[in-house]
Image (tube, rainbow, N blue to C red; front, side, top):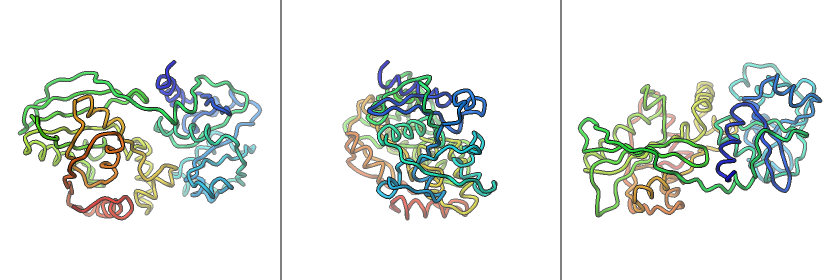
Length: 351
């Protein structure tokens, strides 16, 4: 099986609560805490020797540390198994939404793990699956799928055009919708190709999917207004491209975004909520976006954004950004703090 095929299979197994073997100089067999049931844990670990691995960010929130964390705050932390550490308790450790709703547990005893590459690959894989970055480590289980660590860490995603069709939009030039599928996780992204832009770099917007804002009109963010205004600007321009990317919650997935919302209800900002969940501030990657543009015959763009990371991401992936065009939405009482956090902690620009 190809590297991308093995990664897709491993992602599917983790989502199903099945163990996956990460092969490398060392070997680890892991299963996602979020999807591993009590029954599955008993079946695969009858001797209760499985250990728990959480991300460095989550470990810091729990006031755990080891020598590896001092050098790399994102390095995973492994916790020794205790009799009380079952599937339910492990999920309570992994999910910060439960931090204020549970009694104390412990003590938690971090232990060293001499498999830095493989453990990093395992956490990257569970993040790719859209699950909480927490894993069971099984000692004598061969796993239900095998993937090499380098296939996860060094993967180069490609996208292919699956289908395209005309899509009439209100008060817009002739538009096509083009569906793409990514080779690594099988996600389907779409491009709206609007009007004509031959002879000059097209105006392009990279829009990350936001179910709550785009569909339900949530006031917690500015995503819905950004999407609609971007299409309006591209239409007035006479043509351009909007990429609609399956990167819900800055790449952490819908369920984890809603967990972050719950933490924000308790006073955390968007960045701190992501970190407490065990994720980076922003988990998005723009390799698929660049590949989509190349598949459309585009290698130079004018980018409609106030996020410098999008400019840097496209540049790093080989798409030249000839101009950044400002894209700023007015605040409302519900998202003013969110927008301020984007500027203060994520480097978003005002103009």
